[in-house]
Amino acid sequence: MGTFLDSLSFPARVRKDIGEVLLKKDKEPVFITCKACNRRALKQEWKKNYYVCPVCGNYRPIGAYYRLSIILDKGTFKELNEDLKAKDPMDFPEYQDKLKRQTEKTGLPEAAVTATGKINGHKVVTIVLDSRFFMGSMSSTVGEKVTRAVEYATEKCLPLIIFSASGGARMQEGIFSLMQMAKTAAAIEEFNAAGGLYISFLTHPTTGGVTASFASLGDITLAEPGALIGFAGPRVIEQTIHKKLPKGFQRSEYLEAHGFVDKIVPRSEMRDTLIQLIELHSK
Amino acid sequence: MIEKVLKSVEKLDRKISELEKKAAGETDELVETAFKYDEILEGIEDEYEAWEAQGIEIGKLKKMRDCLLSECEELSPDEKVFLARHPLRPHIEDFIEGLFTDFFEQKGDHLFDEDKSIYGGIARFHGIPVTVLGHRKGHTVEENMAYNFGMPCPEGYRKALRLMNQAEKFGRPIITFIDTPGAYPGLEAEEHGQGEAIAMNLAKMSQFHVPIIAVVTGEGNSGGALAIGVANKILMLENAVYSILSPEGFASILWKDADRHKEACKLMKLTAADLLKDGVADCVIKEPVGGAQRDYKEVFKNLDKELYSNLKELMALSPSGCKKNRQMKYRKIG
Image (cartoon, rainbow over all chains, first blue to last red; front, side):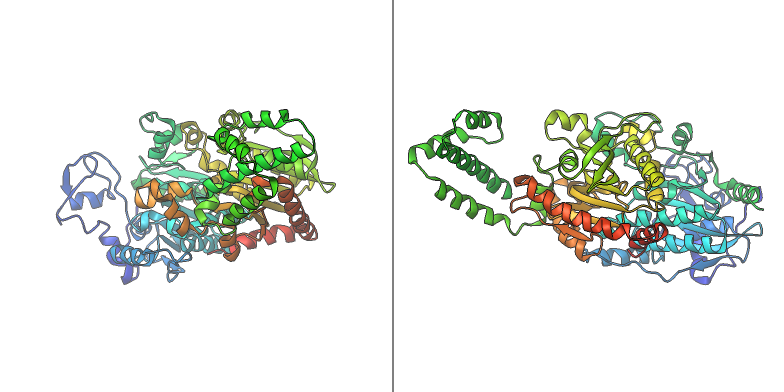
């Protein structure tokens, strides 16, 4: 297991985010309580375990920069289009205030972080959706950042790795959010036509418009254990069909069994798996 | 509001046509049958007798009707949603019959199933072979059920892609008709990879070299609409709507209250006029006052004209120019 953790070579702006992936809600600085099993464990234990519960193995959502610090080689992180901010194309009431609060909470200007870096010496383009910002929902700026990063990968002939996490469309941007599905899918297909390797890594939760666009178009599709992955939400489906859904429905393991995921990869093996795949595709 | 107005207009329409037929010396029998057939019009019998007793004549009734119809000239977004979903609005079968010739239906995704909520095949438009397809809702309750109210499952998107792949192979332009409440939120739909099916259509449609024109005829909601909607040109009927989600779903997500859907309509900017302004729609097709269901012929005439001129324009592009043109349409948004 050669999993990496590199926080020092990230810019100061994001370094804090890497050290403190936990939300401010967590009152206890020493112990962290697992949301699934309700047991407490030392923060150090959680950290060592990449924020997977040391007791029950439940996956805690992690921030975009923290994830990048796990997979990228030391000192190679370089963010792309970090200044692109969310827009308000429909003049939607209270949207700008909500955006401001999301930024205050997470320190992020939008729900997507796009970057270049190296993985075991191989240069890659990587995109991470951060579920802490507006549930990782697809706004026109998220679509634009994703598209620009994919276009960059196409132009430079670099492998592309996208970690998806999204509640779906950003309602406050209406039709503009919907159109990002067409825009990002088109960019991926151009990348595909140019012969690039795209690894789609599905994390909790990947739903709605993100599932129905770039997240489902990978050459290789990987998933984190226990992640919710689907198009329609489970509540809406239950209301429509008036039936209880089977156990484990729309979880990573269920999707693997139904033929939509190549492999379920634990966080501790994420970097090694990516290295293996990138090297298998190196010429 | 518009619901009441239209009901009264329909009543007047019937009375007028009956009186006209009487004046022309035709028998009452036909009208009488039409009367009983239409159960939508509650209490029509009473009013009918009242009119009979008053001895009202045609001219006056027409004036009443036109006065009522003038209420429909300026409609609010939620009234347009009502019209977009009107059960008597022209649907895909009507458009194919009205605008195309020589239609040959193609069925099934040739992988697993035949999804009846997508209807399509090969036809001629002004003599030009084209692939035409779209959502199918049906007019009656039985049809609605058989076609799943126009909500496709993954098999429907894959059937659409099969038809479109052939269009690309044989160099036929593609014309799609959008009218769906959205993708079907069902268990099997998820198990069979609804997200993947929609994503694949978006990706492949972005690569085609043949012209694609999408016509939003009724309601176009969510990924279910977009999955056959990645086009060079988007035409919208005047009272059609196109949005991220149904107004009910939107209100339910945003305010946890689906009953606030009318309020949602105002914020969603989903009307043809809004989308034309925002650069998503390219052209708005005029409808008769009171909605497309009032006069199919006029709708077909207006749509035919715009469809033909847009198609001619796109057919003048080179294959790679046509693909680029479509990609740029979406690249510019956001």
